[in-house]
Amino acid sequence: MALDRLKSTWEKLGRVDPRWAVLTDPDRRRGGWDTDEFLATAAAPIAHVRELTAAAGLSLGARALDFGCGAGRLSNGLAAHVDTVVGVDIAQSMVDEANKINRFPDRVSFTSYDGHRLPFEDESFDSVVSLISIQHSPPAVQLACLVEMHRVTKPGGVLVLQMPAQPAKPTSLALDAMRAAIEPLDVPASLGAGQTAVVRARVTNLSSVVWPAGQLIRLGNHWRRGEEAVRWNDGRTDIPSDIAPGDSVEMHVPVAAPDEPGSYELELDLVQEAVSWFAEAGGTSVRVPVSVAGAPVPVAASPVAATPDSDSAPLSDAAPVVEGREDGGMEMFGVDPTLVRLLFAHCGSDVVAAVPDDMSGSEWESFTYVIRRGATL
Image 1 (cartoon, rainbow, N blue to C red):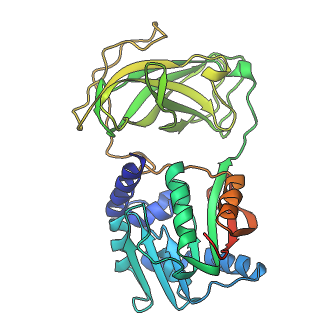
Image 2 (image 1 turned 180 degrees about the horizontal axis):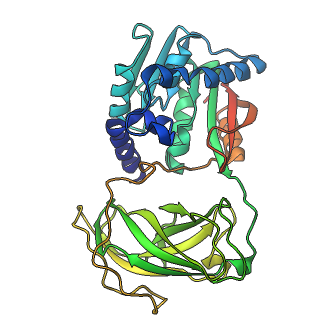
Image 3 (image 1 turned 180 degrees about the vertical axis):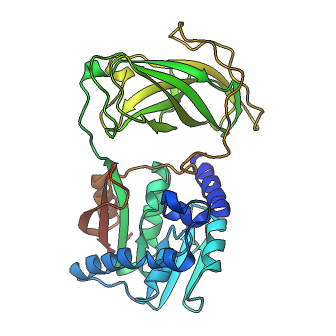
């Protein structure tokens, strides 16, 4: 299930590298964040939150909830401006780290929750703040989170929620530029349900134009059972550099097997984010059979040639397996701004501001919403 996968990912991140998981600076991986420096990074986003609430004629009040608190960075920052802060996170390992580095144990507390219902009474907080958190939850989980945060906010209180909307649209390739040959090199013959692996493939530009780096051109994958797309969005890997017509590059894409055992096809295709998958633009993807078992299995490369491209070279003897992806397994999901407005209007509340921000990185259009809680659910 999506929620189980989300919880498992963040439990592991919390055990292995919790501060980097919150602020993914590549130079701070593997424990590179000093505690004081890490906590100090909360000052700027909290100042921005306060500016937005003040501009809306609202206040954080005396009791605030930090939703998706992670290691407690923002919770500690909020403590300078409200009397009581409660941080909540889906991962107990993150809560453990937050408690470990808590600078205000008399006024700041942390708790984990099951991802369904927040462990708080209705209307128990003056304000709810959530930054760079909701973006990592799958869509159905996102909606449940928004409703729960609304439920625990007092009438007249404020929610300040940052969420990406959609990938920033790149300069679109022409349809006839979306022509590629994808040659699988290492693909696992079998995986356990939810098990991760790295698939290796050679990608060749068959078009007459250069594929430019930095334009969200990526190797990605789908999982299919027959013609049914069981999981459409899984791993992604950017092309490493400009790729001229006729040139090839070897790429690695992280994949995670479906949650239900069975026989599947792993489909590899290129995509230009926010534009099109190459196969949908008239190009050709490639599929390889993969068996999914109920538990993790030793991984060996598939001996079956990929289809429909029968000219693909034989696969090698083994496929590398990773415990997690380079991003630790973190996924990104946007929330349509119209949906945000309609959801809170349905709950009797007002989105009084939707301010563009850069918190989700340059590849995403993102907004910080200021929401005034109405009197009814």
